[in-house]
Image (cartoon, rainbow, N blue to C red):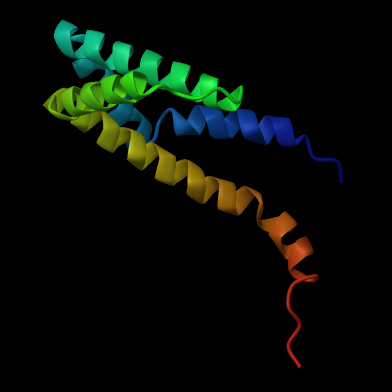
Amino acid sequence: MVVNIYDTANELERQMRQTQEFIGLKEAFDDLKADKEATDLFVKFQAKQAAAQQKQMQGQEISEDEIKEIQALAKDVTSKDVIQALMAKEQQVDQMIQQLNQIITGPLQELYKQFGPQEG
């Protein structure tokens, strides 16, 4: 039997959009967009964080000033209820994705388990 796994993946994508977790995240983004100050802060924080990660990936060191700026932004970000709500919804979606990943990779885990520690 030939299975088109990509059809299944596309169906999973459509179903994911209908989950409570995704709908909650989408609503949290809508709430964030309604608060311009929080949105600007969130975008700035994400940009600084991404730039720092990029530097690390390229083997560059992040300066003390950059670290302090990111820490200050992180403090400001976590002080905004709308951003905290968004982050909580992101965690819920992430947990769902992790659970799906465990299910999807189950056959691989079974294959590799045979090379794990043997009892006896």
